[in-house]
Amino acid sequence: MRILSIASQKGGVGKTTTAMNLAYVLAERQRRVLLIDMDPQGGLTHYMGLDPYHLERSAYSLLVLEDATIGQVIKTVHSSLAFVPASSDLAGATLSKSQEHYPLHRLREKLRSTRIPFDYMIIDTPPALDLLTEVSLIAADEVIIPAQCHYLAVQGVRAVKEALVKIQSGGNPALRISGILPTMYDASSAHAQTILSEMHNLLDHELFQTVVPYDIHVMDAPYHGKPLVVDSPASPAALAYQALADEVLAAE
Image 1 (cartoon, rainbow, N blue to C red):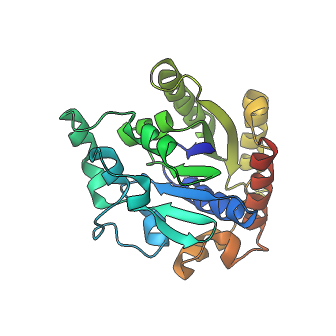
Image 2: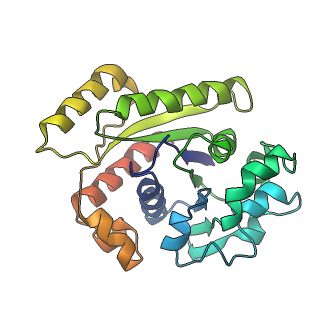
């Protein structure tokens, strides 16, 4: 089993889109996948047709209830894909930790001790390097870092890598970068071309070969309640996520 966190220091870089579409493609490739929403905003949870304000059990339960198990909180999407939703309670998780209501490694222990035979677990983290992201990184084997082709992209990647060093020196020394994923690339933009070139110069050995292009279909898919790879499978970004899955599977 491989546990991958999708992490970034900011929103709007394609983090949730990457988590959802990678999970769906891996499931299409006959891998058993668990998708976990650790973002209090509940983007993935809304995608799945659930209301984060009306959930009895969620990712929050795994953090604060010692006896809560994966089997008690998962929702089945189809035969190869299951989902752990986020609830609005996650927004109060930082307060709970300050009161020592749960240990940072609890999520890691529960994911690794489940008897449900998943091949992949993919964790969507909040759009910040906060406590919930830290918990998610402690739980993971690998991290995928989406980086929008924008002038702040390299600085954002550095921030995540600095956070990884802290996690590696503390709760999860085996954590590694699976890859940095350039997103929202506009081939017609000289600025985007320059940023992608800089990313190759500075981060080349860590970049995925896949580059996710800017694609209007990405914004349409949520309104249809489907992941991009199902809603518009022939769109440029959907094909990019198929290629990303190829790269992830090649590392098995």
